[in-house]
Length: 171
Image (tube, one colour):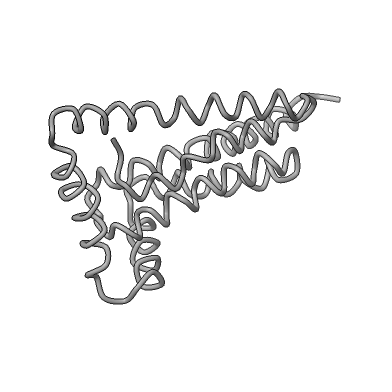
């Protein structure tokens, strides 16, 4: 299970399916419901296991309550947490390559398919908010942000190389 704050991102797979063009809304809604159930299945099975073992109160105390209390105790609120998070993000070792490529990818995607671009940007923004909410900046806390920036960075790098190859071809 991920951090409790990451539960805010569960609607993204369903949103992605609902934004698909060309399919009837009823079919997209059914697929979105199926994806939502699949996304909830691991958490549901985990909670069911702890409930069966009689350890559900300890799971809630040690996993949900503790994380939320740790986030609440940090002085400065969400605004300060976001500033710290962005400051730490810019100092990540992968930032010099990942962030510019992701910006290029977002701009390229914006011109091609705004719905997909907005979905990927929502994913990135959700990850930044989740990291800011937990206010823990160990290296492994950044993995979800890298996962969300990865597709944008890949699109950005591909578009740069595609553009370069197109200019290099004669005529």
